[in-house]
Image 1: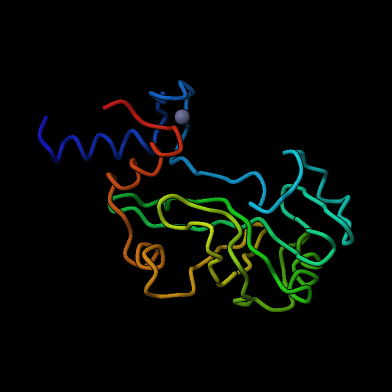
Image 2: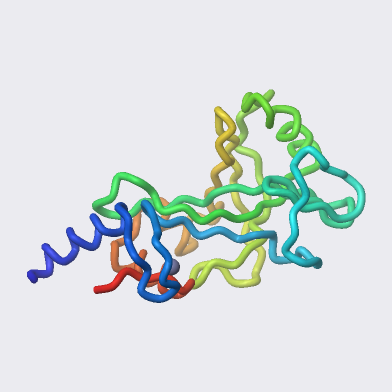
Length: 187
Ligand SMILES: [Zn+2]
């Protein structure tokens, strides 16, 4: 198969339904990676319902996290365009917000309309190989309409991930990232 045909069929496969060569599950559509909790979460991977939110102590749900009653985090998505695909690759991860913006997020969460549309700012609290290590990374947080998760953009324009968010990545690079996390289409 020619290089171009191989690229094209990989792109088609990655956005269709594909059997993963490593985890052996069927993945449907462009796969997103997701971090269950922010890295500093000190407890087991268990979530409470969003509606049970508590602002003191530690709390984790699908969309909100509170650490020690003083750090407030939201589940967001960091998107990277992929050359040749209309859909962006998404990394589900956690960002801090100021208490003020966290309150705004809670207030607008149910109807997906916020008093202001940011961008807010925060710290990305997950690692992403090979882009983000344990060094805290500042991000812009863009609240989204219609109950979609906020999107993140790396603030430092010279950071490799900021550049890839701007310019996009190749299919091969995407496969490299997926493979790192234990998912890969068969060649
Ligand atoms: Zn897999």
